[in-house]
Length: 356
Image (cartoon, rainbow, N blue to C red; front, side, top):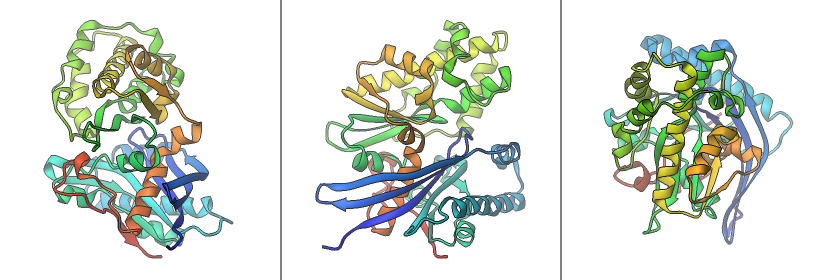
């Protein structure tokens, strides 16, 4: 049997616009399955220009949008080139890019960051565009991380990521992997915090602790139809703008601090409700929200399962790690998108390959 091992740079940019996450990961296939090690990781914080460009990309003309797609690919490629300087044996880059459009019911999804430009700049093979095939096959194109949860983090009853959105992945009673988005998190919290004090995020949830819970707003948020739907289902910026923010706008007489605190209670309630319904004993929490002690306290207060928060590099770079692994599966011609999770007609192998 041939030895199967890869050294891959996983690249991820989340909806919360924290920055460009890069993780250099080693993967090896052994008798008991795949094992991984994060060798090096780094986040490139976006400056004000890139934050503006990425947050307003959906408003551009077609021509300007294509330009930004190429420019962002060059940006990623330049930073990868610096990241892997003096590192030998990198097999390829697996890049998620940055999601601008995601409306699977219309068969639309787009992650900017042109794979060809990443390859040209980094001088490495690049795998990108992981979601399009699944969308074309009638799926949600998301979430894709659950295949990594299934293989790399199988010792946990469920895995929850708290990024721009909260999502969960677990095995059902028939041992099939189930995953879906639960609710928005940082995509809403960060904007509220910015409107209050100009900060990018609520460190430790300290600002959230200061407001008062508003029962009427909490009830209206918890009554949003999305929470009654069964999976597969996914959330995106468009949903927040069309369905979530208008609810907050109806409570403009409240202080922004009270709105923020109520959102904390809403998100923690929805997260705990889903986990309790699943009925697992252990939950792995990752993503930036896992550092938010106020959010985690509220979740824990409603939760029956035991919470595990891993080392900081896994919290911050789990998605970059798993997209690196999706690239490995693509190269190995193994399924990297589960139809049971996305709702596609069948399991598929997504990702476009660019050779430098």
